[in-house]
Amino acid sequence: MRLAVCIPTYNEKENISGLIPEIFRYAPDAHVIVADDNSPDGTAEIASQIPGNVSVLLRRADRGFANSYKDAFAYALTKGADLILQMDADFSHHPRFIPQMVESIKNSDFVVGSRYKKGGEVVNWPWFRKFLSKGGNTYASMFLGRGVSDMTGGFNLWRRSTLERIPVMDFVCDGYSFLIELKFRALQLGFKPLEVPIQFVDRTQAASKMSGKIMAEAVLRVPVLALSKPPKNLTQFNLNPHTEVLDDYKPSAVGF
Image (cartoon, rainbow, N blue to C red):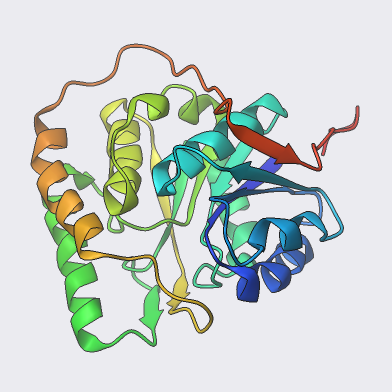
């Protein structure tokens, strides 16, 4: 199974040079796709110089968390990925969990790396941030979860066949709500999830991208999603025409 690892970045130069080699340590045949929002700190340039199966999408227009993933998904599918992994750039999602997630998807349609399933944990967050995160997940799960304990988590693995059924390109959400909507639409379409407990460690380098606006959007979006109908059409994934591909990846005849 050909695995693509999709990582949205903005000013992550302190993390990206260490993260990508660590991904290859646990998934040596993976194709790493960095979707960078034209970081002024040079994240894209640093990532493009890392050896291995690495592609960098330099995004100068329509920037933002959700749009970064839309570009990364489109590029991964174009290059023939069978499995598509989402993860953060700051080591809060450690690559050591990737093999277990890949193994688990054999028995599911998508896998959630969960902070809140039994055995998972959050490390180095202050009590109030843990309270907000846990409360947000409880709120989202109450309306939408249907058995997924970590609706806002960003460490997720998708089968190609699952992702292609979700109308990702039509989403208008960003931040937490984009992650929530992905899982909700999959559940709404009847896809089977499986949660793998993970240890989530707060970033130690660079600044968090979380904001009050993103949190407010998630709160307001959840009831709207709960009242929406299941999507009927397949997604047409298209790379943003303004996105520049650095070190265009060319898969071999035998795979990644």
